[in-house]
Length: 349
Image (tube, rainbow, N blue to C red):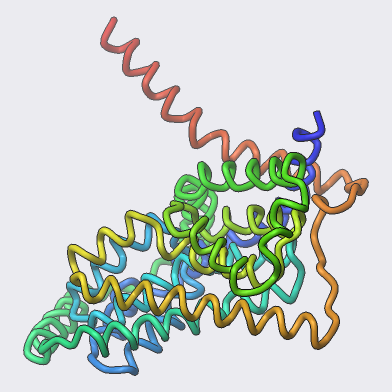
């Protein structure tokens, strides 16, 4: 019962911010065309690495959705560094995870998380370009020309405003929730379990410095978890006693260093790029974590954890939004099951 109460408190606390984030993600998807993203990154050099970080940071893509998108910009002519930068920034943060971070962890983490994601993306991209140089000027020129010509051929009028809003709602509350539902439930459940079962002494034994951050790297490295789902897990770690910097390390490394992403980098960018990618992500995440700990100590900032850290009576409308979010998440599993039953009935008939 304690676990269920803690789990529901987290759902109620996060529902308004998650729903707002999903809607904003859908709007961004309608406003920023895919071909524009590819065109901006189809240039060699450091400029495309920085662009990739800033373009990828707000995009509504999780750890699984970013892989085909990154391969698409690579085929469009993006350098290895720009592709790597996009692979880091996009799953590490996003409009949905930033709003969720504000709800669960407070404004400091909501600000530091995207900054850390952009810095780690730029560091990884530049390191990949440095350690794995490639002669792709002719390839980029050819691919860029092809991209530009196809973009001109595919140029179409934007759909009406009402249709774009419907598409944004459909994408945000449909595809985005479908992509993140499983990991969101796992993340919320893990956070509730950590807060209920894990004693503070377990994480306190690692201290609040470099060793604790290395432990978080080891925990986050193989995990296949999106930025949104990593937020409540990090909150659970904070409640169990780790430092803010160590929690930030987990939120930066977890979404960007899962096994699937590392496999794609090795196959499509090469082994040297993979090594440079991991060094850039892990090194910059630990640097950001150490800096965040110093800032917390210097300014005396308090931790601002959500309902997991304290009981609270929520307004009825927040419970209503929590129910709406639960229905949207459950629909991800109910709908395929209903379709399977209908298909079975048709076959029997």
